[in-house]
Amino acid sequence: MSDEDVEENKLPESGKVSKVTRGALSAVGGAVPIAGGVFSAIASAWSEHEQDKVNRFFEHWVRMLEDELKEKEETIIEIMGRLDLQDQAISERVESRSYQSLVKKTFREWSCAESEEKREYIRNILANAASCQVSSDDVVRLFIDWINLYSEMHFQVIGAIYNSGGITRGQIWRKIGKGQVREDSADADLYKLLFRDLSTGGIIRQYKDRDYMGNVIPKPQQRRPKGSGPKPPVSAFDENEGYELTALGQQFIHYAMTDLPMRIEFNASPE
Image (cartoon, one colour):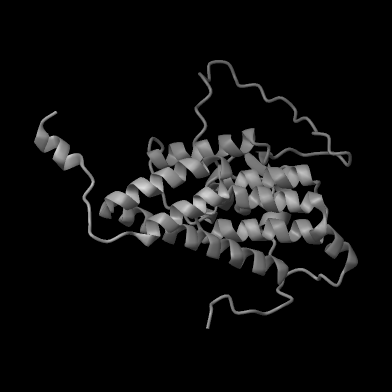
């Protein structure tokens, strides 16, 4: 490597000590005691060299952390504003170790809230988990995982199937506002993948007639006439086979997509 390359890769120095850099590293060192010594050494070395590149990086990083903390604060306030804490059962639930475990899990995995829609799903799940116990906490944990696992389009499909048992892929595609695309397009492949994801995840299934005990009523077999050739491939936008939500899917709708009314009005923006 030439002297020019070494000089080019060297971080630039400035005549100004960065408080942002040292403050950010000190905060991390305090939050993670095991790594505190390492971060302190790094902070000391960078402060001595006073490197602008490092300073700019940490300024951006601190702003990102501030935005994340602001979102968490707003979400917690919105949850509390939806709960009747004068109800003894709700108050005990919020203070319980099991509910606190759900809250910790949610905010530990906060990276999943990459959109306002997903943030609202998280808020709704935690608010409904405090106010009712239709599902066990194990199921609620699964719902929290789904927010991280699936995309907004997955949730659009789930919402389209809700209260529309027997709806077909083609009907769902139109219901979520999509236009016509080619059968061999990337959009069609993505759409088929969404249904595989949701079917494998136990959220949706093909619609079947059932008896009063929930057992599937078998359909009479329809034999294809001889000489009719192979069965044609199923379209991504099939208009024959219907879909419905599983019991898990129905409960997910209740927890994630049901917004409890506000009981306490507040202004999230500082004056």
